[in-house]
Image (cartoon, rainbow, N blue to C red; front, side, top):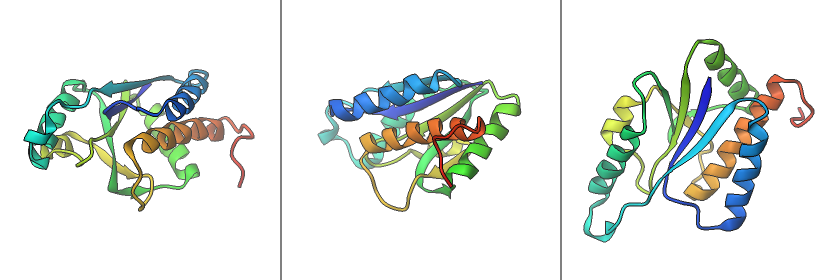
Amino acid sequence: MKIMLLAVGKTDDDRIASLVEMYVKRLQHYVTFEVKIIPDLKNTKNLSSDQQKTEEGKLILNQLEKSDFVTLLDEKGKSYTSLQFADLINKRSVSGLKRLVFVIGGPYGFSRDVYDRSNSKISLSSMTFSHQMVRLFAVEQFYRAFTILRNEPYHHE
C-alpha cells in the first residue's frame, strides 16, 4: 500500500517544510509515502470562496485514481487517539488497498464534489490550525502510527 498526503498550497515557512521532510524521510522506512502539493490558485481575489473551493476541488480530483481510498482532513471528521489511528492505518493496509490518500484542502475547505468522492473524514483537532501546521501534524501522526504498529519506543502511554 502507498500513502499520499495531498495538500493545496505550498508551505512558505522553511522550518515547517524541513520538519515535514524529516518525518517523510522517517516514514520511508515503513511505507511508500508521498506528499503532493497542488499549487495555490492564481487571482483568487476575483473568486468567491465557493468558486475557489470548486476550482481547488477540480485540481484535487485530478490527482485521484478510481481505486484510491480518500480521507479528508476535516474539522467535522471523526477524531482518533494515536493508538486508534494506528489501528485504522493497519486495517486499511491489510484490506488490499492500493493507495490511501489523505487530503488537506484550501483555506475555505472542500467542494461538494470532493466531499462526494471521499470515503472518510478525520479531524486532527477541534481547534483550527494553519494548513502548514496541519501538514506537520499529519505526517508526525503517520510516523507515530507506524512506530506504534512496530512496537517501537516513539509513542508512550
